[in-house]
Length: 216
Length: 216
Image 1 (tube, rainbow over the protein chains, first blue to last red):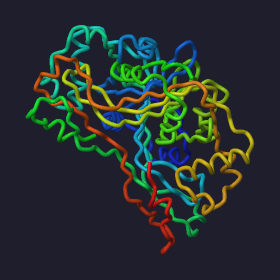
Image 2 (cartoon, rainbow over the protein chains, first blue to last red):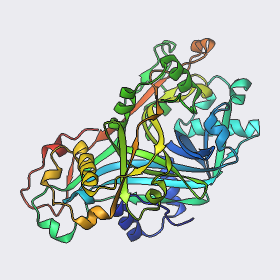
Image 3 (tube, chains in turn purple, yellow):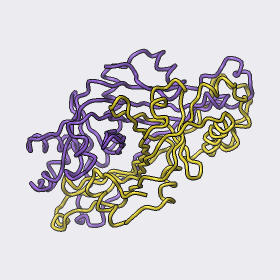
Image 4 (cartoon, chains in turn yellow, cyan):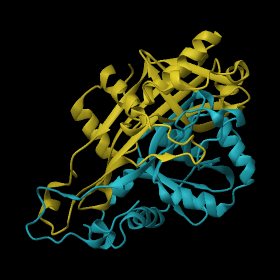
């Protein structure tokens, strides 16, 4: 793992330094907590960022899309950066410059490799769905070969990158604690709502536990 | 505005096409709904993605960080891509390949320009805090000149980019609607929790309305 490469918030930087280096378990926990990610790549010398979903399997992270996707075609066999960021709260300090956010983030670097073998590709996609909704895949209509062909799966080894975590209250300059200013944290978190059944569901089809028990 | 450049989900692509092109109001609404963003940039020919916070003022989007930040120093006067993505729900279909997510996202492209004038820089930072917490800045300890010096603000004109929105239930293949499979949407949204006062707040300092009324 390389050192943290860039931090755009001085408070987080200070915290990061206090915490020292982040291990692979920390990185894995953040990746597993939030499938939404941003993949950065280069086309014709210009930087692109595309939001997509990632999933982890052991020491690799995967993402997918249409085989026709410009993003995927240009990321394949190319260097990419993949970032997951979770906002945990707003940190309100006693001066403007010490305002911050509590967050957990991971940024990975590496070469995106296409999963070529069709069986392996299907296994990865199953794992993606099963990771979110255990037991769902075997209940689904089996995949058509052409669907699988139309889908590209890219993967990257988790070998270079870093995690950053900022938590807790504001860190103000010592004299500022005497000021009569409300400081603190406004927490935010992702709330899972009540499932909405599709209007075309067969009457009486039971709602599976992987839906009712779903948590992020 | 250019056309949507890349879509990693066929369902979203289909939806995007159904909806035609997205106007500036749609882009602005998504930017204003979520400060967390990802900035993509290039260092030594390699793509980097850094999560940070953005705020909009008219036809520009801004982000900031330490003047020493490698991310910011390398983004300045360089081409960047800035992406905001909001996850609204998981879409469970009757086949694996038609699973999707409901989401709103914006990806912008342009050249990051440093806000050089100190007064203008301060005005931008005030606007950032005020945009989230109206009325807060005037109550804070005034900024130290060195704090302002240590902070870099980058901005980019909103002139090239696109928005993508996917909403609603699954879109399955017609024969699959006859299958006894539960399909639907698991909505997710960002929940604002109860504010946590800093333990070093002066006793009796009132909690301001910009905290109690905070919504994302």
